[in-house]
Amino acid sequence: MIFRSAIVFCFLGATARAADGDVSYTRDIVPILKHNCQACHYPGKLKGNLDVTTYASLQKGGKHGPAFKAGDAKSKILEDIKGTDPKMPEDGDPLPGADIAKIEKWIVNGAKDDTPTGAAKVEIAVYKAAPVVTAMAFSPDGATLAIAGHHEILLHKGDGSSLIARLPCEAPRIESLCYSKDGKLLAACGGAPAQFGWVQIWNAADNKTIASYHVTGDSLYGVSISPDNEKVAFGCADKTARMISIKDGAELLKFDNHADWVLGTFFTLDGKRLLTGSRDRAMKLVDLVHGQLIDDINKLLDPIACFARHPKQDVVAYGSTTGAARIYKISDNQGRTAANNDTNLVKELERQPGPVRAICYSPDGEAIALGGTGPEVRVYKADGSRVATLTGHNGPVFSIAFDPSGKAIATAGMEGEVRLFEFPSGKLIKAFVPVPVVARK
Image (cartoon, rainbow, N blue to C red; front, top):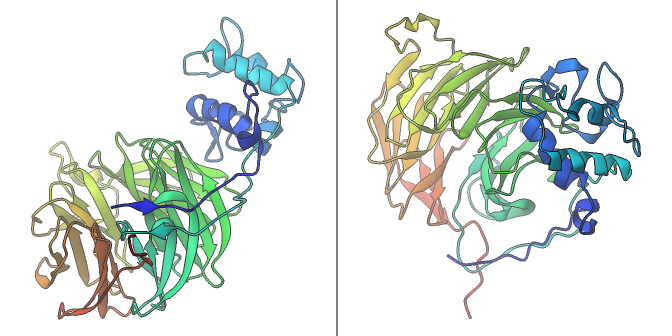
């Protein structure tokens, strides 16, 4: 597969302009704070009333006053991290001398804020082959099908009849898409592996960007929007799950109880708890009021590759890299006892022929579709009986989406073609490549 990407992003801010030898807040200081300080000083855990997740909150400081004053080598943050027995990090190793020197130089030189403010130039990608489709989502009214492309999201009519719009994205790879329950917001996350994680939110009415944020130094997965449309959550390749404010990007939760990549998040129906799923085999339930783990809801059996929440109940179905698929109640697991009973297990579905890479509930919650290695997608009732088999895929399936009417299912993956199937008959309605492809010369 060959791409010729014509997307060019030029961020406003000193990160792109800084001369060699200058210390940049975004490039140099933020990674130090994230690695050493952010676990104890973020909106979900304001130790000492200090939040280090943004320039403004760091400058404001905590209960002992501002963390720094531009040009002042005796700023509070420097007092706390310097010396033979530094106060901070309180429970960690002292900062390396090079990191301390960077922070001191940045402050003494004026403590400039070079946080990126947006993309200065965006050009549409040109394709010579259909890209892998990593994510799809129907709008709640069924009028639009959002499809992940390369550096963009393509909005098609829900019946696949025409392309409506193309939404350029900074991230080369979009890992997850979702609409808010009321259809007002569209969110996407992804990134550039080992470079940056990215999340963006659009107003679905006019396709204008509401917010776009960099989060962590690696890709993001499994985006979800809170019921009040004020927060967005996602999993991270750094083994954390995070929740941020859509309005200003402030980090409201950094959940670091997983031991491997976190590939999915879902809010419970009341929005008070968050469910996370990871390759470490655990689905963890988090109390968002206190930012604390409630419990693992499942017995640790298989690496979780994907999961989907029931649209009307606090029930979740997951697919594993082993081909296993199970349905669980979203509840604490206190009844498991020393025997490690799987108390929340509702049903174990038929084992799939390979890893499950995509899973989706029907709008009424009565059916679950599973896809993976191909060439077929299987659809089951909640009791485990298979009701449909969707065939014809020429490679792994990475994304499945039910039309909100429940009468059609969209599937896509490695081959770059979207297929719409009638449900429950399994009849192919339409197949199309979601991107414009130019002929090779």
